[in-house]
Image 1 (tube, rainbow, N blue to C red):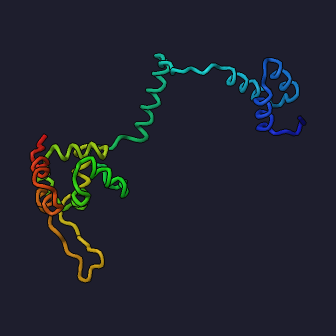
Image 2 (cartoon, rainbow, N blue to C red):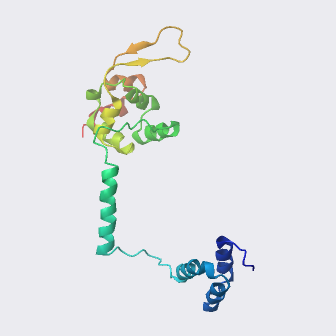
Length: 190
């Protein structure tokens, strides 16, 4: 080993060479400019690792709570109804959501695209959908927005038409949801 070694090289060599208390004495004597770092590394390497993490004490909890309070001032929680639950969904997420709600993807797309009249969607279905999207019902309703939307078709030849929202049950019918399943969904009033 030479005196021209960098801190990283010395620390790596120390860890590989470490076999007892004499090793740290030898390295500190040979590299006095890195003494603090070597002693710190020796201390960390000698600490036993707990299999089970210990519970925080009252002082530690107070420090963590204080840090969380400061963070909440800097990054306040969003008010209910201010998150767009559909904004971060990718194609695989729509498949997962469709499967968890046991409806075709086009039902999810119709809700996202504001084709369903929100008041006609059963409360239980809304709650389950909001839970699956990891949000609240208020967030889901805000994500659905209000008012008609433009509906474009793949390779449309004419102008884009404005489609008015329709009852949720009509969306289920158009998606060819079987009558028994449709009745279950519509009866899920929560």
